[in-house]
Length: 94
Image 1 (cartoon, rainbow, N blue to C red):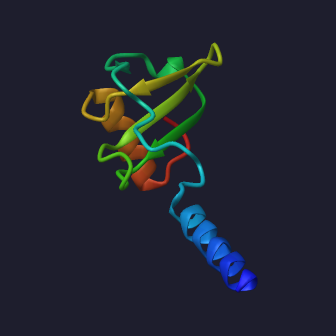
Image 2 (tube, rainbow, N blue to C red):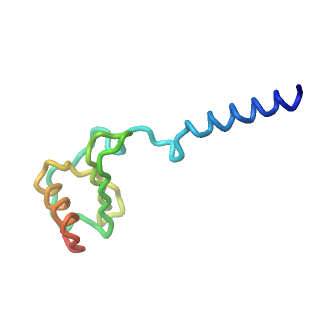
């Protein structure tokens, strides 16, 4: 009887652990702070594009600026469209 109870609780623990998210981020990374305009010289070395997922229904573009700050770019802006176009064609330069 004791081993059955322990097995039940271990199974319950495993099921609960599988339901948890690994990263812990259950929402969009860019809340309301988008930049719509900016020069291409503003963009540093890293541009990350997050496609829509079950956790965030929007496409998100995060750039690292020359001053080592991360900024979100509006995907509908001209700068965002330029970044998405270059990412889809596989270009490295913006």
